[in-house]
Image (cartoon, rainbow, N blue to C red; front, top):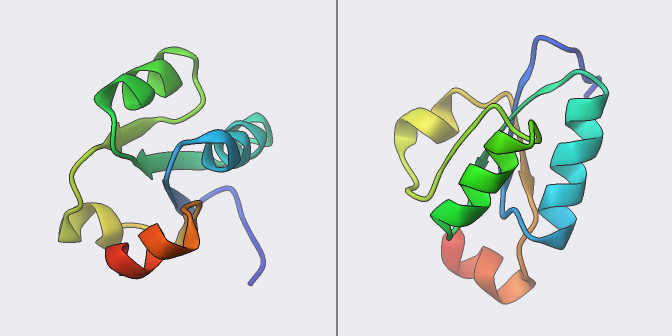
Amino acid sequence: MKLNKDMNILIVGLGLLGGSYAKALTDKGYNISAITKLQDSIDFAIENSVITDGTTAVSKETVGKADLIIFALYPTVLIKWI
């Protein structure tokens, strides 16, 4: 899959790995949203222009509008999430 700037990219997990992906992709001009556990993480990422929007709740709408999903979770957490 080739990335283009019109894609909606969703990152699940805004820890060290997910936050780094979000920052790097945003710096390259991609539209990034996120799902993570803590609202403080979402607020920080939005205030610092790391993501355009985010949520702590998983919804069909949020996941459904993503063209690409990057999972930045521990393997055991990823299995539970899926």
